[in-house]
Length: 247
View 1 (tube, one colour):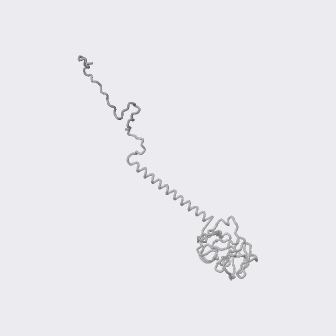
View 2 (cartoon, one colour):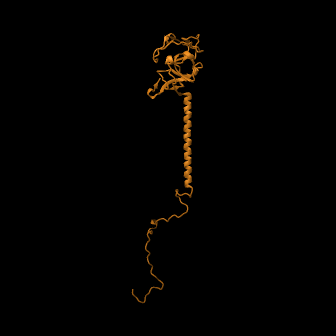
């Protein structure tokens, strides 16, 4: 209407429509949530200055200490097991002389079963390790020989051959001929009068001989050995590896 007499009331200005901003929306629920400017944050990666490095360093020290304690415990446990095995079950010995050739040579290593005679019998032909007899010469503390005669049996030597209660002893492990013993067998383990070619064994005593009969210090010189002196039975050659095998 172009009525010249009509004018809008003084001071009235038509309202201007504001343009929507980039973040505005015609639907309130679609608007971006307000930025959290709170001082406290739930971000676990945020820590007060100077504390993160300290915690990590402390954790590394604790971890290293725990690993060290574990390894020490393992080492101590292994040592304890080894000592128990050596004291009661198995022990390695080396051969220092030629008295058992060709079965065992110098510097061979054998394993000895120390439990064998606690639960089993000593048999003829066993290769045994025993403590040095009082009458034996030298500084070696342990001897290794083969059992030839058992308690109650009579062992005799005729032209170098061995007889047990009058029966010739089969000895396939010997290498070559042997010579008669020239010295008298003197020992409390023999119940007979000392003789160079005869010994009747008392209870609990054993007559032992080296396989290298002519180069062996054995019961022919230091007499029979007591059962209490036995360390155990050698059952396995472990060195050299090429000769690995049971005895």
